[in-house]
Every structure is written in structure tokens, then in C-alpha cells.
Image 1 (cartoon, one colour):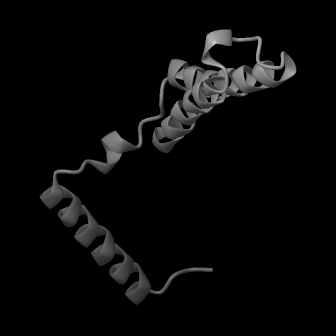
Image 2 (tube, one colour):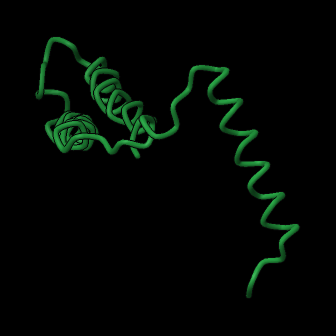
Image 3 (cartoon, one colour):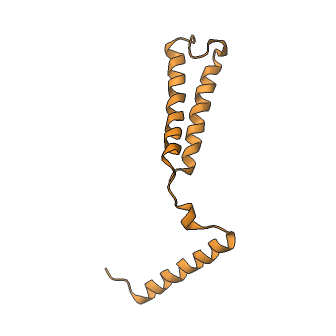
Amino acid sequence: MPESRSRKSAKNRSDAARGERSAQLGYDAEAEAEPLPTWYKAIMFGLMIVGLLWICLYYISQGALPVQPLGGWNIVVGFGIAIIGFLMTTRWR
């Protein structure tokens, strides 16, 4: 459905105001919209999977693997690795 002239002009004014505000803050919306490189996504998903596998291996081996001297701390290590991967998702576009 075609837009009326008043809707078009109001839309243009809001876009202009948003652009001025971005310029005042030193924020470049076009630079922000660049996609992430492939290696970033591979590392992000890899860390989440490695963390999950670390925890699964600990439970399956009944504490003998992956690092026996850590004991129950293996769960913390596994969750830590996975959380790093999940934190990386905040930059994913």
C-alpha cells in the first residue's frame, strides 16, 4: 500500500534525527553492521562444544578424565569454556 506524503516526511525526519544522534555519539551504524569473520563463528561454536564435551567426558569417565587431579573442578572448567563461547555470541551479527 502506498504511503502518504505525511508518513514519508515523518519517516525521513526520524531517520535524520537518528543519524544526527549517532554522529553526536561518535557511532557509525554502517561500520557496526559488518558481519563477523568465519573464524570467529568457528571459535565461538567450538568453545561451546568443547565445554559440553569436557563435562560429558567427566561424567562418562566417572571423574577419571579429562584431568583427574581437578576432580569436581572439571565441571567448572567445562562450564567456563562453554560460557566464553556463549559470551562471544553477544557480538554475533
